[in-house]
Amino acid sequence: MKSTDFFKQLNEEIDAHVPPLPDALKESVRADAPVKELFKEVPAKKGFRRRWVAAIGVAAAFLLFCAAAFGGFAWYLNLPSVTLMQVDINPSLVLVLDRDFKVEAAVSNNADGDLLLSDGEFAAGLVGLSFERAAVQVTERAAMSGFIDLENEGSLDDYNEVNVTLTSNGRVLPAREKEIREELTQYFCDQGVYLYAEVHTVRDHSIKEETYKQEEQLTYRRLESREALEEYADRAVYSYAEELLLDAFYKFDLFEEIGALDRAIRSHPDNTYRRSWWTISSGQTGELSALCAQMKEKLTVLKVFYGADFTERTTVSEWGYMAAEKIYRVSLSLVDLDALRALLREGCNGETFGGVENISVRLNYFGFVSNDLFQNVVTELFNGQITTLSRLVEDVSSLLLTRAESLYSRFSVLYRAPRSAIGEEAYAAFLIRIGK
Amino acid sequence: MEGKELDLLIQKVAAGDNAALERLYRETARGVYSFAYSFLSNHQDTEDVLQSSFLLIKQKAYTYRRGTNARAWMLQIVKNLALDELRRRKRRGEVELDERSGVLSPDEGSSALDYMMSKLSSEEREIVVLHVYWGYKHREIAGMLHLPPGTVSWKYSAAIKKLEAFREDV
Image (spheres, each protein chain N blue to C red):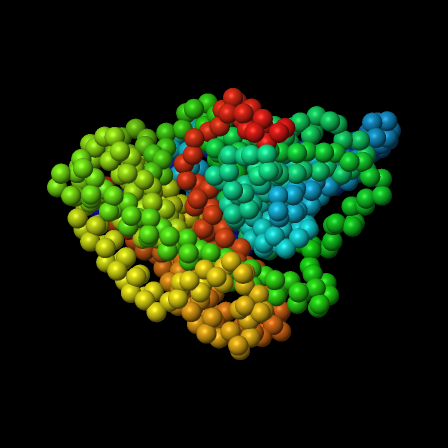
């Protein structure tokens, strides 16, 4: 069958399910639209002018009355004219909320916040969301960019936490705190991620909308002075180099673990014919079954992180893995792994990694890390950007974007991996573990 | 539909033009439906999301900034609503998701839609729908899904090959 025929049938099926535009939808009032826009396109018919003038008069009087009544009521309730919701994970963002507590703008408060907002589509998607949904989206994005440890089940000194502060120049009902806390807790329990949400409200008469809202509807903080920019670029590049190294070791260790599991499976006493995971029958029990499950897990990680799929239990898949592993090992034959582990311990900085005196260190680094997904970026680093700070300063935004993309592409896969939801009892136990 | 045309229609909808809303619905309902169905795999919920999407598009059209990406703006609305519905279902324990492959398993039948849902992974479905119904280029889809352009082209061809086997399989 041709694909065009398939789509023809698909269109017919979809058309059968798509109802005509409901009349109710045509009549629905755009409740959120500014009043002037609601009246903008109403055509005035000839012959009814006098009646229209009267109607407009009545409407204007009614609007004035409403405005006065609302103003008085607002004053009575002390409703805020501006509310800022700061979400701190490690990225820190400030979301400007309107009177209905919907997001009007997002502003970054730190470098990691810049990372999140460097994805324009994500940033634009925040606008118009309710405050509790926005808090969830920002936190989820942070989780997808690796700022939340998905495996951390929490202890007294180490647990995932998100801090949300609602600062307003009016009264914010305590129910708002509860709504955010419950939404975040429920959402991340459903995702199987242990997260503690700390929510506060603060009243501050001095805050003004204009401080955060600029000409552009959506904006994020820019580093102002050249010194600050240089310092930021310096830190960003070295920490990025370190991340790449860490990731390359992750891949290396993964191959090691898969190799160890393969050996353990082949030499297991229950495995009479010394078969590998790819060729052994799937009906194993006991320890051998547990080893096979671990192997499947590791190969899945290899697939989702590095795009090498050897999860099919066939001889062809086994050969494919063996070939890939061999090539990987050969490519590392000239690499001094101990020196790189030492570099990771000391950290990448000007002294250990920069300058002409460290060319051999960077050569060794390049040989190891360029096996990784981030080859392009590493090539850029190697080509001298790391030693020419001024060029990096000019390029800092593109570096930021690349880093954001690479973090997101890696950790979002991990985040989307299936996990069991956390029940009420398990969450209560988590709160006890972290001392809350 | 061209991005510029979509841009203009949304502006007209924002100004309260019902004819523009009808045209927008006529031109994009199929795309909205297929995009929402690719998440939900259920006609009833997809129809609900379709209607909620257009209601929201009408209500929020005035927030759309002229000259920005109208398709992305609409798709974001549809995606948010579809994901909300999925979350509701998940809370009710109704999601039928093959956890390993991301392939949804609707009732087997001779329907092309169900065939697409059962044979393609969620990523392949998204690529096919975005390309066929929303006219996105592979390069643009690559940007949206954070994938290399080559991977998108490759996945698209693989998906089309699977769909071409439709008649033989059913």
